[in-house]
Length: 241
Picture 1 (cartoon, rainbow, N blue to C red):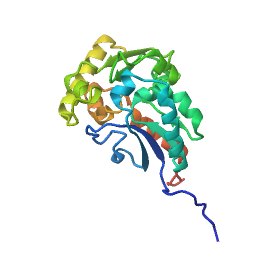
Picture 2: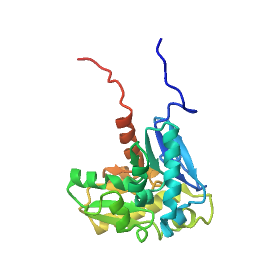
Picture 3: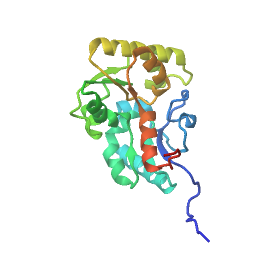
Picture 4: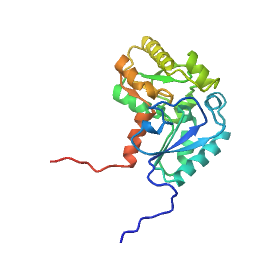
């Protein structure tokens, strides 16, 4: 008789998500919408840590809470841990050192990979260009990658709902239009860009439309999460020789 090891309250969870507190819509493609991924996720809500708080007032005081939350996800049996905001890149090293499962808190961690496969400056679409600092890039080992950054901080709908928490309801079509406008500006500034990285976790729902319009590879947190999950939960291959 085979004995299966117990000790977990919930089983079969692949990826844990450190989730900032926010109440605006999370359409399919958002990491906080479980239907975005073809595997199971588990969420640890960081009450009181909001998008405006993390972008405008990040502090070392957040590290303890984030590490405790990551350890709790590990105790629940997740095989890897990500985050619900790309600006968590600031704490990538500390949280990775706090647990024994892979940690990938930001889509920005893909920047060295994207540069190596394109050998061209990487276009970064971010929630806020002024808030994205060298410390964030250093946190994910991307400080030497040539990038061109375009922020959405001046966009009316994105700024009001996501950056300033003025309301929870959101016009998704307007967000998409604002993102397309920002991408047009980015590519006009740097026409040699050959790929886009979406720092912000609120942008992957529009990745398909971006690619259809601009014809570039698009890297985001969903592409990264899917890749990492595959490495920590390999499947049998099926086919024939």
